[in-house]
Length: 309
Image 1 (tube, rainbow, N blue to C red):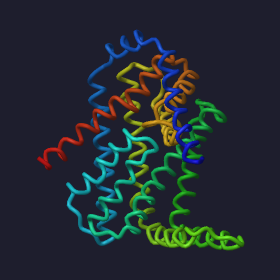
Image 2: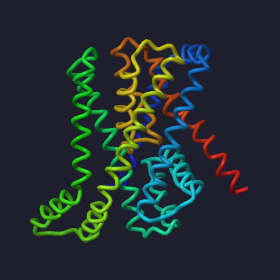
Image 3: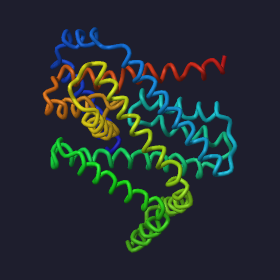
Image 4: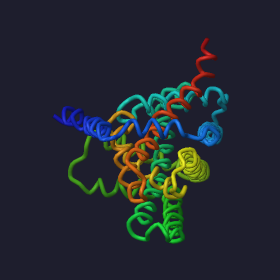
């Protein structure tokens, strides 16, 4: 029953996307695309490639600190292919294929899962912090008060850093709380062992994954700024970036393929507050979340295909 419910749940985003598609004036969208300024599109792709390069460097450096020397091209493949699979499969399952690549590098399955989960945890936490700051920016402080939004974000950064440093203590506390219950799930021991493994990775993640994730988030904001310039959208780069963070967080929910539908709904709702039309909002969402990102991922796959041939 749970599996059936999950399958039906995944249709929500797809149905929402179909409904949005029929509400959009695609003639207007086509006119917007014809007027796009190419020089800023180039800037968008350059920033996208830099962000991907940072993801490769941080994983290679992390593995090196764990005692595994892996060639750059191999780490590149372990980052690019799972990211592509994550774009074209429901529930973001492509990212978990990274475990297979890490085991090829000599990591045990448990350690590989720990590295992947820690990387995803840090990325998700940074995105969550930006989304929470966005809620304050959009709903509480108002878009005129950027300073307070920055204070909230920096406070969340400090909290996350402290949690990563002390993730061992947090995992032990969680185990003690679960131990108070009279029943234990068969997977309890495995989860406890995984928690201990994450504890050992916590400090390393705080020194490597965390700063890299922050840099990648900032580059994502810059990407949206270039895209806004390309489409001549009269919205600040900060507003676009926080809208991106909120929509990306929602799109992580396993409701559709690649977040289609849920991402567009958030973009339309937030950008409409700044007087941006639904046609422009859907154009930004599709270009950033599907068209440009897919094109960039396909370009990044070329070296891998060349190597195999």
